[in-house]
Image 1: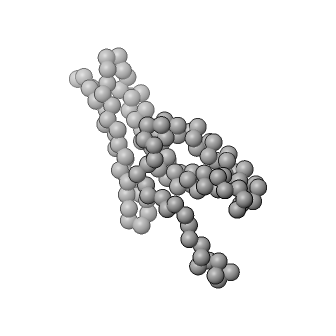
Image 2: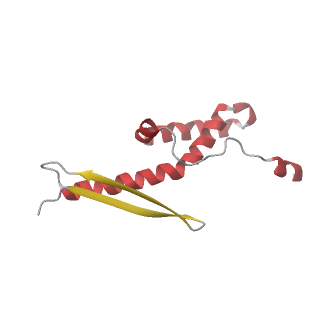
Image 3: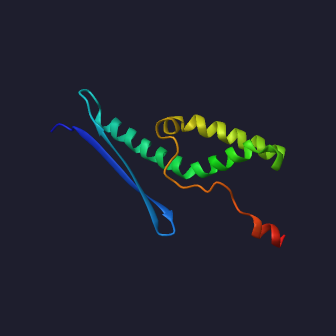
Length: 117
């Protein structure tokens, strides 16, 4: 038996009765170890899911770092550090896909909170 492709999919529970299915198909070349390719597929899918779940935090940190006058100094520094770590960790995804398909609100409306407090 000759294995020609490895296909791996995983369904992630997002809460609120929502799921996300992420998968990858790898075409094996001569000399490729199917077990190693399977493990790479698993790592890739897990990494892609983590990218999608961490992206909203990254966007908020970028906004905070770009607006230091409206945040405390240590918050801005933490945001800059988070942006740098995220961009280093997920540079493959950021370069290949740009922005993910998750819709992220541009601003947060805190007017209701501000009026109460």
